[in-house]
Amino acid sequence: MRNSICNFSEIKPLKKVLMHRPGDEFLNLTPNTLERLLFDDIPYLKTAQAEHDAYANALRAEGIEVVYLVNLAAEALEAGGRTVRKKFLEQFIAEAGVTSPKIVKHCFDFLNGIKDTREMVRKCIAGIDISELKKLGSVSGFYATRDVGRMIIDPIPNVLFQRDPMATIGHGATLHKMWSVTRTRESIFAEYIFKYHPFYDDVKLYYDRTEPYCIEGGDIQVLSDEVVAIGISQRTEPDAIANFAKQLFKDKSNHFKYVLAIDIPDERSFMHLDTVMTQVDVDKFAVQDAIMDISTIYEITPGRGGEIEIVEIHQNLTKVLEKYLHLSHVELIKCGNGRRIDAEREQWSDGVNLLCIRPGVVIAYDRNFVTNQALKKHGIKVIEIPSSELSRGRGGSHCMSMALVREEEER
Image (cartoon, rainbow, N blue to C red):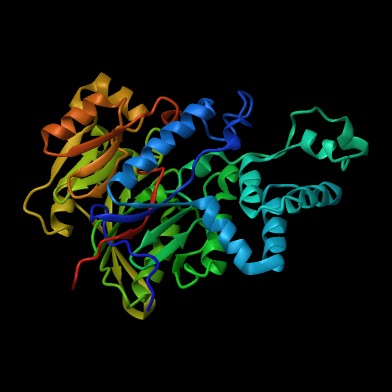
């Protein structure tokens, strides 16, 4: 049996990772649309691309294969043929909120007219300005008088963060209903990859984007082949976690025994679990100081008849991690080395949002130098990447990547 996905850990040696290189979607950000599009600033595209390339090259230097969302999505659409391409564009335009039949047709014709499938996918991500339709002479009447620069289809700048629209767990995956309307379309690409890509059409889904409850991958961490941790956050609902756990436990091809639901504050500064905690070694976690005060954690285990059992755990985070990872001691390395000003500044640029590529080796933004130094003092090797523009998106190396394959232990 082919296992195109293999992810049973946050720290086992990383073999293959999914990313998205930023594109023209950044050029379609404006001060007036930042809040709606969930960005705090407008990154300079040329530098952001150079920084992202430096990240990808750092991974390749460690022997890790980097694959890109645009390429996988294009390959899936090409494998599906004209019918799948048509279905994808119709779905994408509908989920972009375009309702006028005339404009729907104009957008479809415009996108479908881009023969290179990769360029077509890139354009979907970048968005469509009404002036682009005007140049083709395809807009008349009311829409012809609208301002040049008005986006008919919004860009999707958050697709930079491939951690969120889907997640890999064991040999399966979850496909997510995103919390914000502006991010809804991000998971369409993975939907088509899992349905039509000849290498990934074997992937079992433990959650689907059509379900009613929101869940995002930044809240999901696979701590071992027995334990999955999920943040109950601003963007992941308890009912989504319950539905996911039911499907995960039904799959007898894996050995997961526990889902730990960690209740984190419903605030943007926390956003996801990986904003405040990531594993960096077998017995070490990088954390934002506030998570150490969290005491509401739930153990979810298989119940009878395909149901689940939920029990509140009355222990702090450290004790919980030690118990479920079978460790005698866990070290929590604080953002900013515990100094409040440094912690608040470096939390803003995702100081503990780290991708572990093998035990004790992480990728981190160079700007978070205080936290990086604290990690080094605890024996962690820190591979620093440039971050002046990438950090403006409020996501670190963990956010910008999704592990497709990690080394698996023999059982």
